[in-house]
Image (cartoon, rainbow, N blue to C red; front, side, top):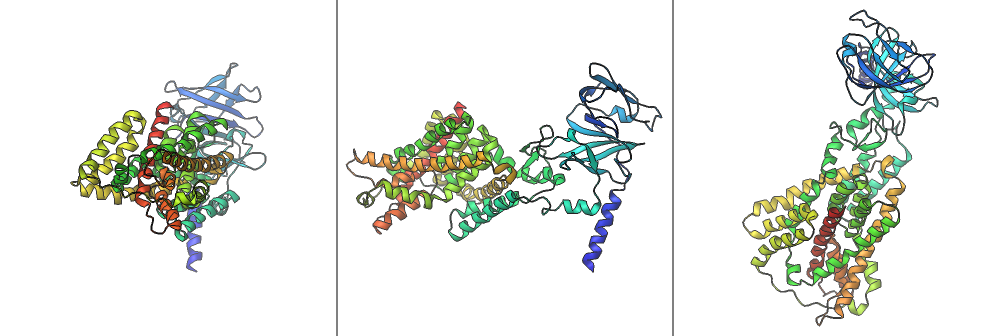
Length: 557
């Protein structure tokens, strides 16, 4: 009974709100002039010339009528009119407030004529074409006589409101129903929601990168709950461009998810994550065995080979560079580079990079077994030497200077990585190191995961380009693993003290998962062979290497 009462109150509230007098404000832009028996006329207002006239250019017109009267201005009693000249230019005459409020801009308006347009009660309506497809939504800004001037408030993606042949004022109940997710859901949304659930399942059940995949998986679900047209620009990561009617990143400032995605789109969150990674990373394994730097560098070959492959498939240089960096299996680096070079591809690139980071235990072991012999897997490496505190303090400073002189474009990433490591190793900034390695990186990871997941809106994400990026990404990651393994085997041809070639697979940037996988595969053949510390050397070198590769691409493109 209470539920029925609540719905009754809600229904009548909506009805009463829709019966209020319409607003009298009005701004310039486009007008679509359409009468009952007359052809449509589209006008673009250019600027406010003076207090009496607003000049405009005729965009399109069917018919040869020279004069369109639009009724009395109620404040002045004068009869303003739209006057057209043979060259397609004209002016609106009159001196009332209504005509003095035109201004330069790209807002769209609809001028309608006739009793079939407005019932005198509703101030919001729908624009539809001859097939009944929804082209957009409008709100009446002023009504006088048989005429209504309405602003086109929302546009359907890929639709042109100028093709409107009729308008519709939905009943309150119909408006409520059309505003639910059930009325707007498509099979593509269902597919993406299932993918989000799969991400959450494997991260909990298999413990594959749960700190990343749980936020991303939930973000995928969040981004694929279908939104009605009137809410889309106020909630989604995307918005419908008011000029082209295509999906674009939300820059309206009124969207919650758009604001969260700001940190992804402008490359703010990846450096913060690198700061936390630096504060958690021990570079001792790299310092005790500098040769492992070569293994980290070798793994980056996959990035450049995939870059060439993407160019061959028709991607532009900037897009190809952003796709190639997936081979480093470094999500923050991939997001940072794509935010600068290919913002339109951030979603699929980020999902691909983080997906392959999570699938390191699935992708790498078969490649390791194929490219190494049992004898090589059984190689035991000498214990690493002890690294002094002085070395640990000097390293982040010296490494930052050297690497950024090579690739200045990597300063935001490498600067934060080595600064975080300096906080850890200095011994006097424990509080800052603790904040960077705990609270800060956790907050940045949560926001980044949710925002990246939410950017996979099915209508934008499910396309041929995304599928191509996923295929190129897994090829890039596989090539990076192969190059690291093969280079380790080549190094053994010249080394007196052999290295276990399995650690070459840790040259990708998935820290510390790749090193852990190397350790586990090695223990399958020798339970007492502990490779984790040795594998961490090329693993952290891979982080540095992928950031340098991103900096090189950023400097070139």
